[in-house]
Image (cartoon, rainbow, N blue to C red):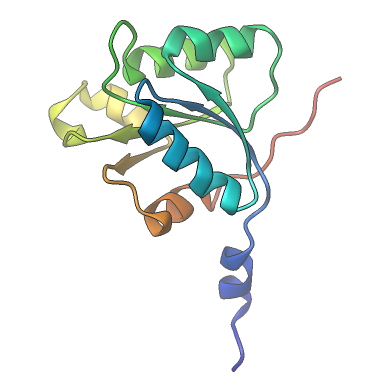
Length: 138
């Protein structure tokens, strides 16, 4: 059995450093396990404030993956803060809601991708696949 080049590439995506923000411990754990199983390094945060604090402390990541519906700071709030403070950093939203019902059209256009819950391995891999590691800044 032979595989095309694109299949071979998708089977082994580049390893990324992902800041995963979700207030639900079980959901965060499952997502972290999925991402780790795919070879990524996951930095977990229980909320938007904690996640942004990790970035402000100099944590270097390739992607911020945040739940949309969280108390205190929503995924939209996280995305706006990342766009303002770390331009060029990719942001993906995870939502149990229909994304088009939440946020403005402009906000929805700002997200690099949206993944619906329940999140499947395939959907997560497909969304993250095009993302490449960011150059390390010294």
